Length: 213
Image (cartoon, rainbow, N blue to C red; front, side, top):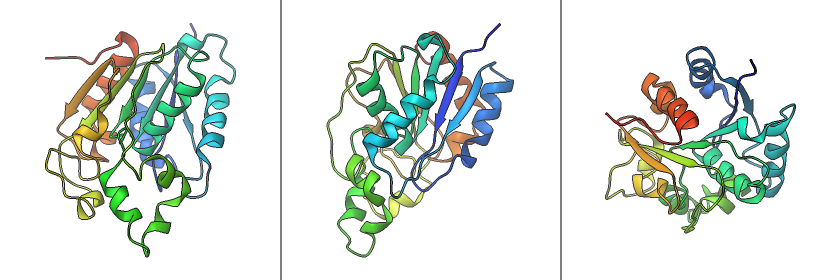
């Protein structure tokens, strides 16, 4: 029997290696066929990346309802954008992890520093370095997971007056129209190593909601 396909999308400055544990768990413990989509985070154009992601996600799959996406950080923002532009092509579910869908306070502050602004790259500058009131109105269900362990470089560039994962604030991961939103006790990168987070991702992809105790 053919497995449902999950496409993982990495975040800023990453190449997908950090997704290895999540990939392994989704494949071996939860029965998904998993592929990783990679893109040059520092020099890519968002529209071009989203077009490539749409093509990559559907390659070799005849059933759009069996293609799911999982994006971490900036990768989650790109998943949201791609689905908004190609939403009728993919009707599977998607989960974003630590994704600043409302924009990133840390990125906004870095962008204001002339010496550090180039470190973000054009893609992050366009997608997360400004407050952007996104929403979700696509046909597919979208879930968002936020972390609350403050370990990450973002906290050095932003004052968070709320719970955060060290890089992204909880409110930055919430937008209208989400099918579900979950807060977990993990840091921005720690959630990628978590057995429980992998299980929550798998549960949402199958049920359209996160598991509640």
